[in-house]
Length: 578
Image (cartoon, rainbow, N blue to C red):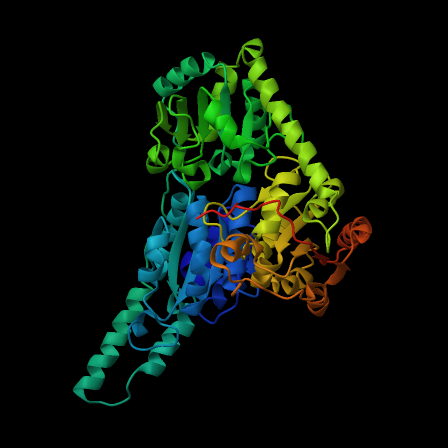
C-alpha cells in the first residue's frame, strides 16, 4: 500500500503524524503535490502573499502551539524570499520546518527554471538540512527534521524536495519516457538506459519509515542546581530575568508561572516571556531594569544571553553572583561567564528553583519595596506624558487606550520600531504566550505572518497586530490573506510618517533626514482595498470609539486596520540599539 503513495502523499502523511494542523505556503509548481496531499489529509493550507510571511506564520505557530510550524516554499526565489524569516527563527531559537521545492533530480545544474544551489544559501541559517534523492527517503528525512528542529537549542531545519519525487510514479515515469531520445544509435540507447536507471533509483522500494528518538530536552545537572539553590538563598537583592527560551515548551507555561511566583524574587520578563505572570503580578517589574541589575547581588538569567540587550553583560554589577541556564553553551557564556552556569532548559530550572528555593520574604522585602516604588514612579511619569497634547495623537495615549481595550485572552503581535517599543512600556500582555515579537534579530515585517499564525492557533482570542507605519508595508498584503481565510485580526498602525526609531539618532547626529521620512499614507484605505475594514484616527478624542468599533468588527469576523495619525514625542530619545 505504501508504495502506491506519491511523494506528496508521503510528506503529508508525516505532517499529519507529527500533529501539524496548518501548512503555510505561497503556491509554486515545484510544491503543488505537497499542498494538495496536505489538504486531502485535513491539514489547513494557508496561502500567503509572500514566502517570508508564510515562514513567519509557521514560526508563530511553533511558539504558541508546541509543535514545529511548517512552511512550504517553491524553488529558487521562493526559498530566497524565505531566508530572512528562517534566520529570524534561528536567532529566536524557534523550531521550524521549511520544505523547499527544487528542480527535478535529473535537471540539477543544467539550467532548469529556478534551479540554484539552495543548500549553499540556506545551510548557514539552519540547524540541519537535507536534500532528498529517493522517494523512499522522504519520510525518514522529514521525521528527522521534526526531531532536529525541537531538540537541544530549537531552531529551523530545511528539507529540499525535488519535484520528481513528489508526483505519482506513473506521471514521473511518463516524463522520463518523453525525455528519452527516439533514435537507434549507440548514444541514444545509452541515454535511454541512463534515464531508465535513474527512474528506477528514484522509486526503488525500501523501508518507508525511520525510527526517531523522542525530542531530547537538556536537563540542568543536579549538582549545578544545588549550587544555584545555595547561592540564591543567600541573596538579599535578587533579580530574575526570564527570556523566550524559558518558554521553549509552551505546554509548561502555567507551571512555569506558578514556580516563578513561588520563588518570590522580583522578575523582569523579555520576549516570549512577556505576559507570563499576567498584567499586574506583584513580583513583575517593568521599568528601570538596568538600574536593578547594577544594584542586584544575585542575578538569575533564565534563557537570556548577555548580548546587546544587557549591554553585553555590563548591566550586571561586577561583583554580583550570576546564575544562568541556557540550552546553548555558547549563549550561556557569551560576554559574561556565570558564577554557576548550566547547559539545560531554563524553564525547567525555574520550576525546580520555585520548588526548592523559595526566598525569605522578610529578607528581600526592602529590596522588593524599592523596586516597586521605582516602577510606580515611572508608571506615573508615563501617565503624565501620555496626557500631553501634540499635533497628532500622543503615541503613549494610543498605547494606554489599547491596553484598556484588550480582552483577557488577547494575543499581541509587535512589528515596528519606535511605536512598538513605546507599546512595550505601556501595553500589558494579559497572560502567558500572549506576546509575539521577532526576537534578537529585530526583523521588521514579521507582523502579517505572526498575526496569521496567532489567529489560527487562538481562533477565539482577539489578536492585536501593533504595526509601525514603516514596518506595516512589509506585510500589509497579508490583510488579503486574513480576508480570504476568515481571520479577523485587529491591526493598529502608529502612523507618524517616518522611520522614527532611526530618525531619532540620524537627524541630530548627522543633520539630515534622508531616507527616514515617509507620508501619512492612507493605510486604512489600503485595508479596504484588500477587503478588510479601515478606520482612521486623527484626533485623540476619536481613539476610544475607533478601538471599540475595531473590536466589534473583528468579533463579527472582519479583519480591521486602525490608522492612527501620531504626533512626535521625545519619549524614546536616545534609544537606538546597534
